[in-house]
Amino acid sequence: MKRPLFKSGVAENLLRICRFVLPAVLAFSAVAASAQQIGGTVGNMQPQQQTKQPSLVGQWRGVSGRITITIVIQPNGQYSQLAEMGTVMTTQSGPYKLVAPNIIAFSVTNWAPKTMPVYHATGTVGGYYTQQPLVKPPGAVDTYVFKGANTVVLTDQMTHGSITMTRVQ
View 1: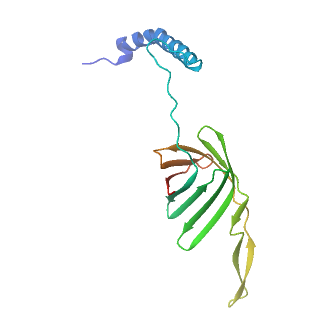
View 2: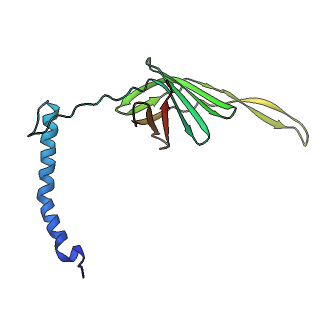
């Protein structure tokens, strides 16, 4: 019959060893990181080569539920987005900014539609429509992770919802 780890002394021995091993590993990691920052090496370790990340510039398309989203990211710092579900569509556009590694912020300066028809009933029969203004959509701050040169996953920092986008052009 096996004894539980916490009664057999194995856990105590492991913790005793970890008191010495973990600080040694951390110290070695710190030395290696410092050496890499100044372009050196530690032992047989070579500095990591920075891999060039694919560009976000281009046209991307993804599907979330029944909504198809197309985003065009231009090299001049502007973007446009089209969301379609059947015959209904919305657009928004504005500047984007790469605010940190793998984080992009979208600001909305133009959007459509800007109004929405609202029906007003007048009694039991009949009524009329008016146009009510729609508020400006909020911008978004997304993290992005490339899953290849032509696939990227965007995750909204506020809602934590994700969409996989595929490069169209």
